[in-house]
Image 1 (cartoon, rainbow, N blue to C red):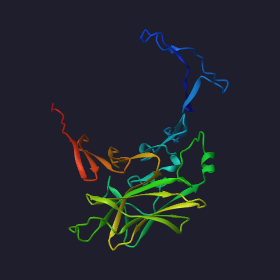
Image 2 (image 1 turned 180 degrees about the horizontal axis):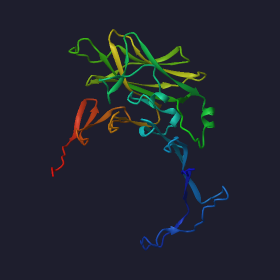
Image 3 (image 1 turned 60 degrees about the vertical axis):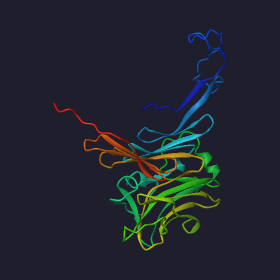
Image 4 (image 1 turned 45 degrees about the vertical axis):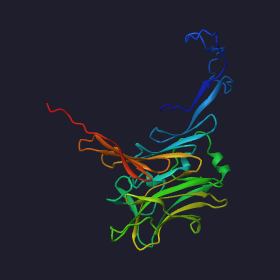
Length: 316
């Protein structure tokens, strides 16, 4: 078998200072007791970190600190690359789908549609919702009591999303309307809507695009309070217009958490984009030799080039 870190402790006692300001002698422990491996009581040793979940492939995917604050991650691309990291969130509470990795991301945040390639906010793929159509995914709603029952070490990752009733969550996505006349100028999109419902039927809120249209894409973002007594949370990608709509980079996480997501090239597996706390992307562009040649950052005012460089090998 393989040994993995479970808990780490820190020795916390008073220190002696003699005023000499000498690193070797000043500030030494006033007392020191070895960690007692046989008994659970170690007054001088304070719990600093506890790993609560590992993936089946050995990656640490959830831990909590001494203040019971969680950090978590999700892996994709055959469970080899990190697609999301979150702070102050359980692994079961975070979901992301950029539609590049149809195996792992669809495993925990599955939308009932096949991605299309060639036009995407990040990467190469997005999900297409036809005019008048809906595509949806579901998350399980659990009570705070049930959430407490999964405290402590869990040997496997959560392959679905579970949100906690009475808690607020942020849901965001990027959308693009595919107009028959691309030359038309629009200040906002009116066809796409991100609907949130419960139990497969009752809609509790609708989110529409806001902000500027950036290189054809506009963001939808909203915050939803999970109602008590419901079994499932429904996330619906809806198109009420006469043109097809693309959705990309959809994610959900607790409103008091901080989350970043990552998109990779399907062939080279190089990092293609990193999406920040507000779901804005930093794009990484590579040359024909696979070297990083340009970095672009998405902002409310458009996409800006922040660095560019070229490299070459000396011919022998």
